[in-house]
Length: 205
Picture 1 (cartoon, helix red, strand yellow):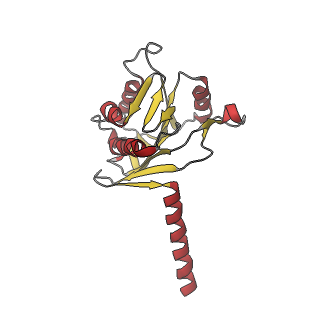
Picture 2 (cartoon, rainbow, N blue to C red; picture 1 turned 60 degrees about the vertical axis):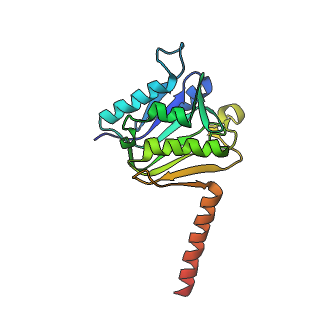
Picture 3 (cartoon, rainbow, N blue to C red; picture 1 turned 180 degrees about the horizontal axis):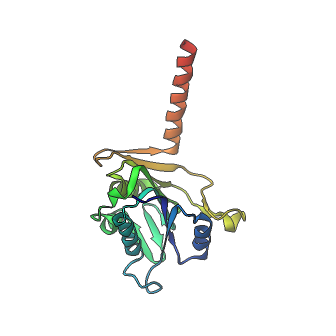
């Protein structure tokens, strides 16, 4: 069985995203550039990405993480001229057995602006979690804020940085029946409570 650390799906229609892909390419990453017709000979941008993931699955590949690098808005990603919300995400990627592509406790990350914002953002993450993570369990996550390309703003290693806002997570069980919404503040609170609990246990020893 072939293992990759991740698949990196990116909007190849923009130079900024292509530059990010160069710096994120490594032997353990499967790079999937996508863009909309008529610039590429494909029916729709993410149909091509889906077919690439299905091919990986058929080869016995398992992924630890799946990354989507594109523009976004509340509850959707936008690659070139294609906008994909929770419903179209299910329609494009669902019913192709892609829940078996991810390794145990997989992670699906959407780097675009505001993808996880508002109720639509939660629903989008839930759709992604159920499509990709029902078989493995894990988390789909993204930001509720604008992101900035570091190459444009700071001249650092090309990536999308979110300078404010929260990361929102949807955690799903391996049977797909249980999903939980959490955000970075809630997770930090839980970690803090757990650390405090451990401190109290040590004090009582």
